[in-house]
Image 1 (cartoon, rainbow, N blue to C red):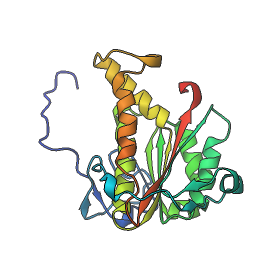
Image 2: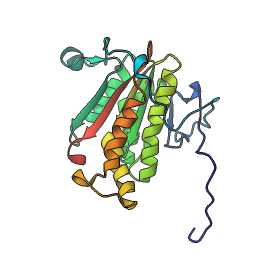
Image 3: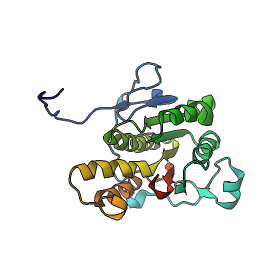
Image 4: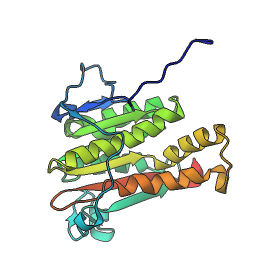
Length: 236
């Protein structure tokens, strides 16, 4: 409401997480979107996980079966590896993402649908992911009609959730569709705050945020996170 007084809170929004999050769909604030009731948890989820000590990181020395023979045979992916899938719109990235989500041999799958159209979000959950895939997954959604701040929070929440399950000994597969729209959200916010544009209109802060999120959830001894990030060619 215009003219209303605004009072800042003394702390960030608290999110409690637990095993009950499996099979659920949430927004960037950790609020349920699937109508299955409230989410329960006992542990406080940090906004972003702390950086991993480089001396505790495992080497990428074990192949990961993603359930797609062409990838397993020709483009073998290792456990703990970070992978970017870059292509234009409408060529099947989300379909491939659904196949990897359902068929990868991982304990937990965390999926971030960032900046997608609402129709595409529902189609991915109902058809690409399916009931079997959703049962071992947590889906974080921030569609295109959400504010850029919510798109940033949703992306960061994905990484925090994945790190929480990793720290409890689970093998986690993290998928974000798409990291390009994460950068676009930061561009909207930074330009509105007066930050100067650089390459393709992206401010310097956008280039610093992407590697920062990647460094915070690498693989630790005997547990890890496998990352799949989608990038849309040409910034679409």
